[in-house]
Image (cartoon, rainbow, N blue to C red; front, side):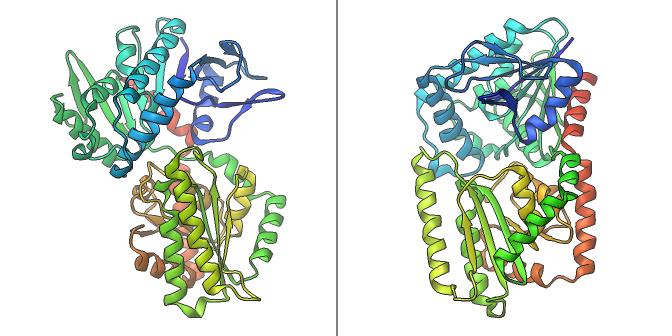
Length: 449
């Protein structure tokens, strides 16, 4: 018996030296489990890869590729996944593009994944399907294989009233219900899914859904970070030196940090506007505080993301034009990609992390900051999944500019004792959300049935 993980992306990157492990919550959580018991990761192929299977260096894991044409990729990933499901699940309804050809490509690719899994599946194997790219896959697999089948949804499941905007809503829910166990980061998302299933006529009792003769369980299994790795990073002398150099670059008493992909769900523009409001409303902080905003380039070929970059650049320019002095740079905007080690130096350097997505499935940056910081304050959006678990953060409404400005002032004035008390409690919560424990908990629940 072995484990088959199915996800849009592989846990390895293709380099000149071959396949090397990628950094990220999902790979961190699942690669050790695959290594321990042996198994296969099934993922869409990156452009330019040759051959259907590959073996990463020094790994017992088999990597099975699903090769897609450019048309299939654009319809399934660029279209249905990112122009329909992504904005829908994050409540950006004005950005949804309901095009039937997107759904047809999405169905075609999910069928291709089902064929790939069925080809390698052996009796007794456990299949674990990941995320919004593959909502139809559990139902398609249920027709082809026998054995434990789990599904985890990594982004927010919206309210049933929002989900039923989709003409294909029932088919998608039925696809998910091909699994034996369906997991979400929070009970709010799980309850939204249960209400959605009930709307489409599936009998729901408690956290169970009846599908013919089967019962599907729906549970909350929050995914965290690799706490061991971040503990090691936080103890690194090199990282400490890098953090001190960032403090010197800031040249102020207090440093605020934001870290995000440049995505419209992350609230970067609203956060910058809140910082502008903060400088206006609390002028005594001028010259004493600086804000570093890291924005990793994302989906630059999509018009909505190019427009977002233009809007963010405009706000950055206005803040610098209004407040910049010879002896003080109030804002530094880093539009680039950093390694996990480099980000951890920013985490150590910052007195306050301002993590304010407009909607987010979990938000691992919030966990990374709190676990790496030695005395910082986490200001967190109450619309991030992490807010359900990180109660000791200062929770804010990411649409409320005055509220965020006031929270910044409070965070910057917070006494050392309160900062330490909150941070120690956050670290304990994050330890309990360890990424590898997540995988063990979910798979144990799946096997217990």
